Image 1 (cartoon, rainbow, N blue to C red):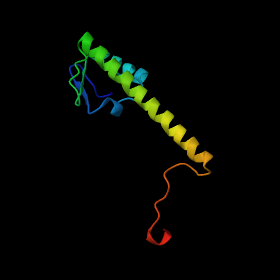
Image 2 (cartoon, one colour):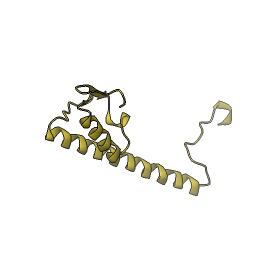
Image 3 (cartoon, rainbow, N blue to C red):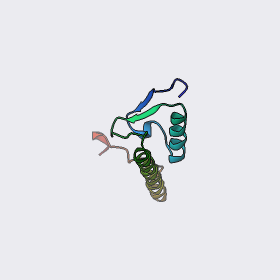
Image 4 (cartoon, rainbow, N blue to C red):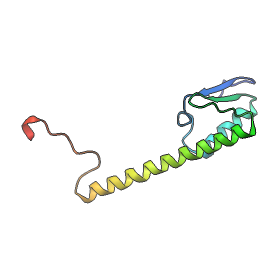
Length: 100
């Protein structure tokens, strides 16, 4: 961000490489806009210089944040389940040939 100048374009592969929350994403996008720079996401064509492009960016950011929250919930539920079984988190270790 410190290197962005007017008419530069910030390019990312996916939004999750740029930000982990919608709030943070919107802050970054505002900074890019204030610098007079653009933004490009390689996995989809999103043009943040238009109102529709900014809306799409916000929607995609919201979905990404939702997805991360769901992963956290499922992980927590899984860890609680194995704890009730008397194990400590993670997958069961694979048994090698002489342990079976």
